Image 1 (cartoon, rainbow, N blue to C red):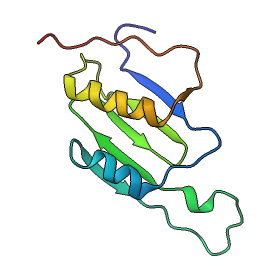
Image 2 (image 1 turned 180 degrees about the vertical axis):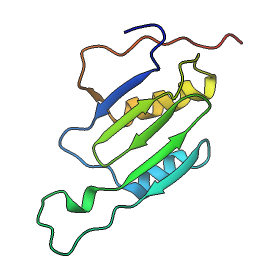
Image 3 (image 1 turned 135 degrees about the horizontal axis):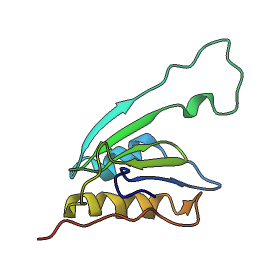
Image 4 (image 1 turned 30 degrees about the vertical axis):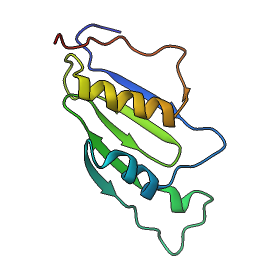
Length: 112
C-alpha cells in the first residue's frame, strides 16, 4: 500500500447478522452516527432485501460503514489515528472478526 493512500479495510461476520438497534446502542455514546435505511421494493425478490441498511460511524479521522455482516473502515484523507479512532477500530474488529485480506493495512498512531 502506498504511504499516501488513505486507510481502507473491510471486515465480515460469518454465519450471523448484526441488528441495527444493537449496533446503534454500542456506538452512540462515543461516536457520531448516521443511520441509512434502504427501502424495500414490493416487487423485489431476494434473500437479503431486509438487510440493506447501513450505519455510518465517525470518530476523528476514521469512519466506518456498518452493515448486517460487513464493516468498511476508511479514512477520507490519510492521517494518524487518534485514541478515539483506535477505540472505534477495536470495537469494529471485535464485532466483525473476519477479514477478506490476509493483512490489515498499516496505519500511524497520533503521538500523545
